[in-house]
Image (cartoon, rainbow, N blue to C red; front, side, top):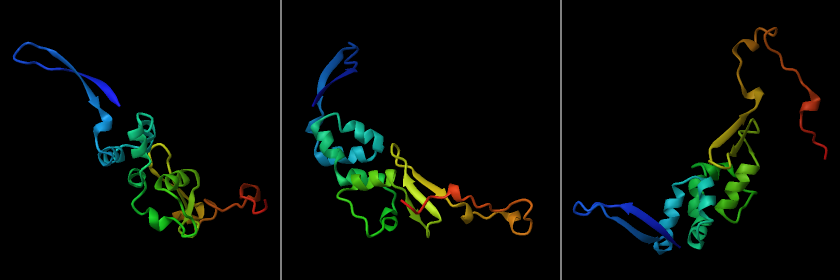
Length: 150
C-alpha cells in the first residue's frame, strides 16, 4: 500500500515542497507487528483495515499477547483453551473470570485492554460493622441472586 506523504523542506533557502510516496507494505511483517503491539486493541482493529500486510500483522499472537495482562496465564483455568491470543483476549472481555475463590471477578475492557475487577461485598471489611449492628447489617435478597436453575 502506498500513501502520499507531503513535507515542507527548505533546501538552500528555496522553500520547496517535496512530495513522495511511502510504501507501508515494504516494511517487514515483524516490524509492523512490533509497532502495532505498542498501540491499543482498538487501534489494532482499526489498523487491520489499512492493508493486507497490516491485517496479517494484527492477527499475530505477538500483538494480542501484548494486550493481555502479564499474569494472564495464572488466571486462565486449565479447562479453557483458545486457538489464538486474540480469541483469549476477546473471551476475557466478554466472559469475566471468577478469581480468588469466587470473591472477585476479573475481565478486560475491550477497547483499551484495561484490567477490571468487581469485588464481592462480603470480601470488604467495614470497620464499624462487627460491633455496631445498627450501622451496618447484611440483608439477603433472594431475588437479587443469580438463579442456579436454568
